[in-house]
Image 1 (cartoon, rainbow, N blue to C red):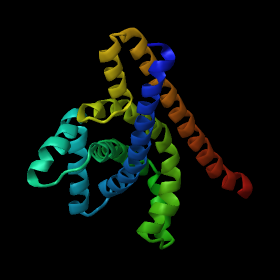
Image 2 (image 1 turned 30 degrees about the horizontal axis):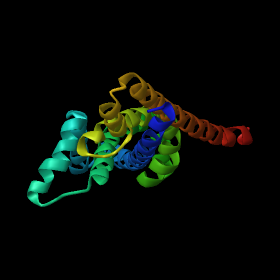
Image 3 (image 1 turned 60 degrees about the vertical axis):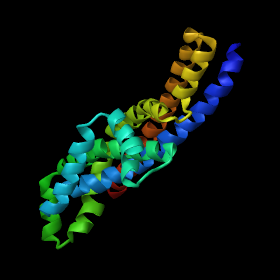
Image 4 (image 1 turned 180 degrees about the horizontal axis):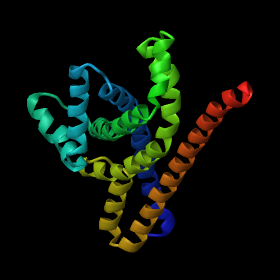
Length: 221
């Protein structure tokens, strides 16, 4: 087989990899914000549930999580197709790591601003979304960029639950052609290109948020 013939199945696999990665990054970010805010809650039940979720997914291997959701959960009558399972597990894992990023960024907001908000009789929800979050989200972006790339790399494991992603296609090609060098070189380049695109996107989002945060200050001055 020629390089061009290798590219057809690898590109099909790359499409699935990108779809799973983007879906789990978006869902993971939503989960991260919910769990991260819950971790800062004064309610011990809410913060306790969030803490348990974060510790559970941060403290167990992704491969075991995938196998548990795909092979063990159906034994109690709950089953999902492979792609749904992959997206769900990657989202929960990304959300668990992202939750700590959100919590840390929120706690880094100077306490004087919370005191000023209370003095002005702002509600807790108003203070969170209009004072704390706009500042914290900018500080989260570099860490979220790293999590996005890590999420992409973690997608390689979904091939083990029969998802025809980039890694799955590479393994299939290698078994057929026995041309490990060419197949895995193309696979390596494929992941690198996707990761590079992700890093550029996350950097652009970060720059836009920073410009948006700087604009009111410059306008006020």
